[in-house]
Image 1: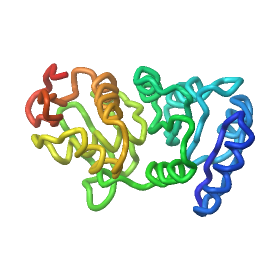
Image 2: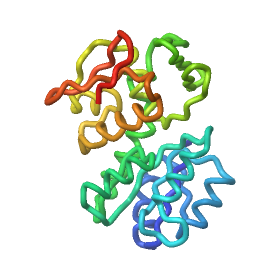
Image 3: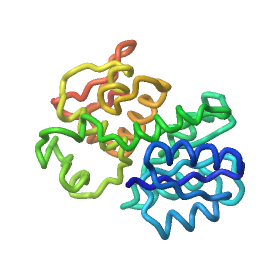
Length: 230
């Protein structure tokens, strides 16, 4: 059974979301602030963390950033925010969140998004080579690890799935809509999610990335030498 953490200072939100997720068959842990959420994340196995951006203690954004600094902690994170501006949503994605939901939200939609982040993506499912090499970039799908010139690179689950998808579909152009559906199986979502994850991959891989932007159309991973495509 998967264990989901719900961290929100609103008692009603925690209770309603907990009931929906338990109905879906999840084991649910709850926290009323960031301090309690951090304790649970440090002491228990959590499969998905749903974090309120505005809760007291370390807020959801801070918790997400701290989790992503840990080399081995790749738990999927969904942020809950009352802020609806694009810059705020992008800030959450850049902090390493896998998804976000703006309040007020449908508990049913949150349950669907939890199911989505738990589902193994096509990029990491099926028959894939255990080792993928592109120049100095080496990926192990078996150990879920990435190295660049022998140096370990810490990727979130979403970033790892996107990289594997690119590597196994080199020189093929994909729109942002394609990537949402084919990499993460999302039939809904903000296209800026793709933009932010591409940006983060480029930053983490540095000059070794081969992601090219085809303006107005989408992205592709060039099989040739790395280039500065942005």
